[in-house]
Image 1 (cartoon, rainbow, N blue to C red):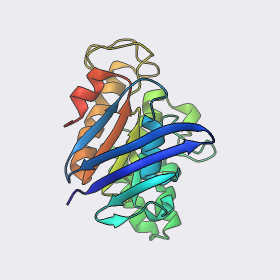
Image 2: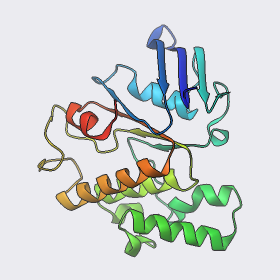
Image 3: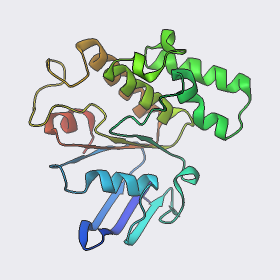
Length: 218
């Protein structure tokens, strides 16, 4: 049985059909990318998987359980938003710890997990900084760390290393990524590699075909 299964997924916004009868099975350990132009339904599908949008029709199963109508805080899915969605009034440490605090984990466990994730994303010195004090690449790494905080078995990422529109270049030689310098890109991809080993399955959406080919199994 597939770890993640989408069956007949359809999403309508009024008369507009954003996703039409979409089927997909993702096995445990797979990293899958959605590749397509803006407006083709990539983000909408990811948001339905994470629970931030409800499908108009069809079903979503994670680990054999139908979660089509389960709210996002009960799905145990980590999500990296395209806009990062960091809390501007919280430090990096508190952004990462947010989910743990909501689960009322012990202060000791929260402190340990924050330290682990800050090391993973190579930002141990940034715990007390605020998002506005970080570069775009650093903010992306913090968003990834926050998504990994709760050890979610499914990680969903929307444009995790977004390129300027129209760019199709190898990740290791690109020089003009919006908000990312060479060091940020290298560290973000190292963190993504670590993330793949920490989750049962991964899903990402992108408009860049080289990014999709390098990151995804399919």
